[in-house]
Length: 336
Ligand SMILES: Nc1ncnc2c1ncn2[C@@H]1O[C@H](COP(=O)(O)OP(=O)(O)O)[C@@H](O)[C@H]1O
Ligand SMILES: [Mg+2]
Image 1 (cartoon, rainbow, N blue to C red):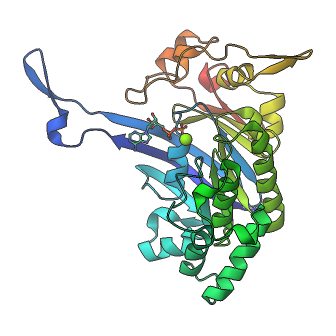
Image 2 (tube, rainbow, N blue to C red; image 1 turned 90 degrees about the vertical axis):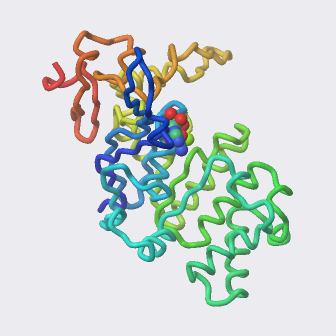
């Protein structure tokens, strides 16, 4: 199967200095320039095959959303390439990008903030459908949108209501319906269930997977919790401080996790002992600031398996078994 998405050496940064004046600092009576740059995404590469679900997992602040927003060109990449179905999105003109935009849709974490509160649900769906010419008339669009709403579990008689008249789970269904309205091939779902009650999470995950079967989508799925992605992913990339530290099939990651950070994420999951749910204390410390990146391995400060070399140089990615890549000094001769 061919790749629908290829992300190559993607780098994204945010410059916190608004102007040159912000950069000028005095230290020991001397003027010097101080750059304040947030290194949110640091050389991320991965591929998603047609029909596949690729999940990015990692703690809050590790750069998942920035990666997603850069892929769909809500942000221009600092460097690196994004190929969608073989097309390099960086080289597309504005008009060409508008054409491609309907092929890639995003579902957001907070379904309320991403729906216009002053628009009726039917209009939230019809507007992009008509803009991307996926219906021949307003009447046609209305019929198609009512069908889509039914498919996601919203009844036609609810279509003229406003977003605030729905529950969180229903609003996420509307967000999904809006994505479907433009007949996409690829869906970027950025923590689509994180804001929902646990009981609703499974329903929305099931809906996303049913739609995948029906429409043959490919997904980039983002979560901060490994347990959310277990049953839906074909492949998983574990992200730390803007880098993918381990990637492999769901089986590779769940049965043979290698990177100390992946192991720590598993340790942090609540588990059943007898009838008791045990919450372990999880990972010590917090993710470092992406403003001053370390010289060595980004995980060094929190790693329980660290060695001398880890502080000095960053590890290269090693294929520990076919398709299972780990960037850690514990693996591979190149990292000795
Ligand atoms: N617009 C922005 N300006 C400055 N820093 C940002 C901006 N967006 C995100 N960041 C920073 O980039 C890092 C990665 O953020 P994000 O991609 O939202 O992580 P995640 O989605 O994994 O929680 C964080 O340190 C965050 O504070
Ligand atoms: Mg995020």
